[in-house]
Length: 410
Image (cartoon, rainbow, N blue to C red; front, side, top):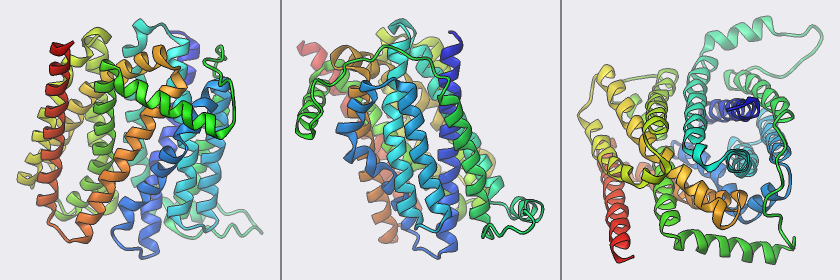
């Protein structure tokens, strides 16, 4: 791996670090506004909505320009959403603007891997990309917890004042958002040094109707491809379940472990530690040709999630969440690499990742909606955990059986 690859990783790390820290700052801001409890999962729904609506357009956009430039523009949109939140826009809408930037960023960050590296290195590169993204999730949660602590905010408010200038920053979440702006700025600067690669699969036409038709063609093509189908189904389930699990852990930690928001936020990082470990193991031991053999791990992960209902000690909770994360990382990294490889061959990197984002974020939208509805119905946390674990295990079992059946038929 050369310097260009590590530049791509660095840009992704700082952008993802800011995204994840901002999520917890936005949640804290909702608390200060006395928003209803179900607004928390809805917050992330606003973020992923752009992935779904803009999916037909962000893929062609990523394929029509050098991907480093696309990442720079997308990062600027994220920064604008962060500023809007700081200036008083409701967190739901401001975080939605950040989601627009993230939806533009994703096809470029993954697409450049398939264009910049040979396919033999894709699982390895994805292991690094996912591992570093997860490291950003871990540090984002830790950093978010630290920045939302009153000591940190009090220190900055006391020592960060500019004489004669009133910056109207007077709450803990606002202080955190100002710090997060710095991370977005660092990511934008690194974006400028990403190596240029040849433009891949440029769109022959740019009118919206053609773009929508092209997206629908790519969507059907990927779902009809045997390997594309199984990898897309698995990654769709994983990211929808992962986004829901992160918010479930926040609530579960408060109810069962009696953690405050700062410690509960940092506990979500434990799952990410596990994902990083699983990603490293997958990058080391799973080849692209053997990617589908990891499917049974997904079934086991769903069963392990259900065991959360028996945990009352924080040390056991940490071990269990690391295991859940490791299992998730081990099966999703090979699936992600396989999906990128098939998509690159069938339709172009940006197009395939836009289709992937559409499916994954539709899954996040639906599962978070169901979770928000369960909270509104005042179901017990144990009931939610059992239903969630059963859903993961049953869906992964169905995907596994269907894939082996299709192979036998083929």
